[in-house]
Image 1: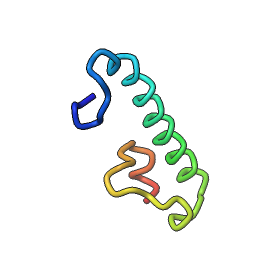
Image 2: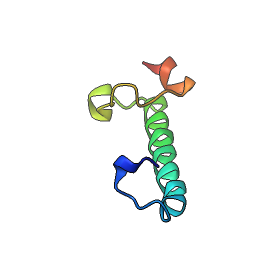
Image 3: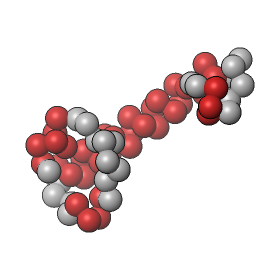
Image 4: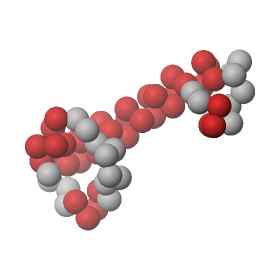
Length: 59
């Protein structure tokens, strides 16, 4: 984690895995919904956020 995140250096290694899992969970959920046919307007994608191959094909 970067110093810009405001997390103290000794605590960063404890928090980083949780943040990583949250981001992975978000990406997996977006890909799942995109593959199930949820309209783009309901997904409200963040530019450059979903980079998995499955989501790229469904766009």
